[in-house]
Length: 211
Image (cartoon, rainbow, N blue to C red; front, side, top):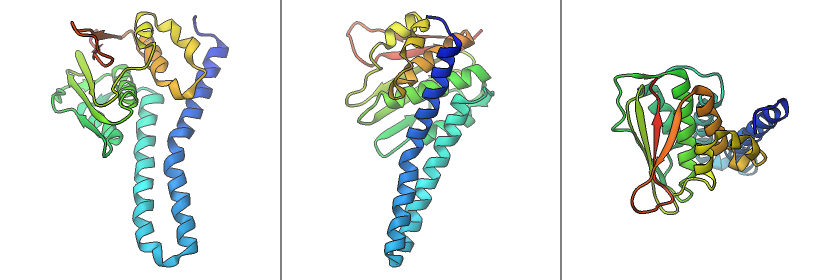
């Protein structure tokens, strides 16, 4: 299935729904804390800390989504690390120690890698480790490890034929995999799973970012 005005509209609708979903958690925290303070002014000191945490989480998510889903822009390796750090939680660790910091990501490569990071985080439903290593202008290997770690169902098919992604935009909760495949296709970049001798639901993902 190729892109049509209708499918492009579906993509924009899915992105808007997804962004609202991602921001609803921090916003609801802010509103909940505000209600607590209104009912119990003595709790204001503790509430300020909770509101600050929620506000910072929302700001980090907005910066990441703007870079991943907005206009593509080149990004230094340190800038990439700063943005992906926003995905880290008490249960999710981000390891970029083996990412070469001597080169920048091109605009298409930066956007693709940020979306891959979002997809990898989603693929760790109970937390774990997301590790990325390699060269921003060459190859990047993405590994996920943790309880329940698995790439989304149908992801292999998307890698083989990204055009299938247009048929998978109805569910904002499952948007990240088809969106990532479409971005790779549009940028002329490739992704492939490094299948080993033993089948695993979370094999390493190879991103080829070079010309």
